[in-house]
View 1 (tube, rainbow, N blue to C red):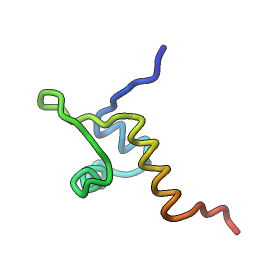
View 2 (view 1 turned 180 degrees about the vertical axis):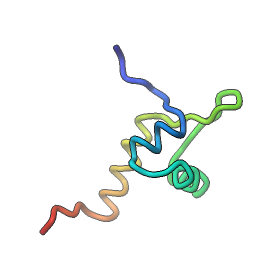
View 3 (view 1 turned 90 degrees about the vertical axis):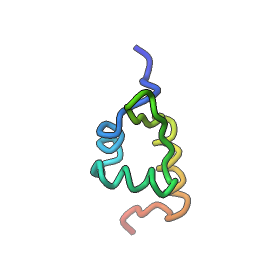
View 4 (view 1 turned 45 degrees about the vertical axis):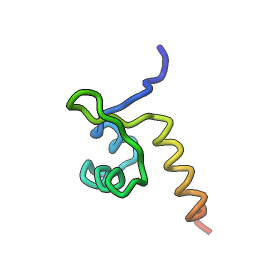
Amino acid sequence: MPEELLVNVVEAARRLGIGRSKLYQLIGKGELASLRIGKSRRVVVADLTAFVERRIAKQGVHNGK
């Protein structure tokens, strides 16, 4: 079965390990893209990966050293 292209806000927050409110904050600040389909808000799965990669590049990776 192919990977989902879009996830709802609750699933996107779960995948990032954050709360729904924090996800909406990130969307509101333009740090994470989302789109509306009817009355629903969806996040592109590839955008979740890109968001994490941008944060890693910006903050560096803490590897416990």
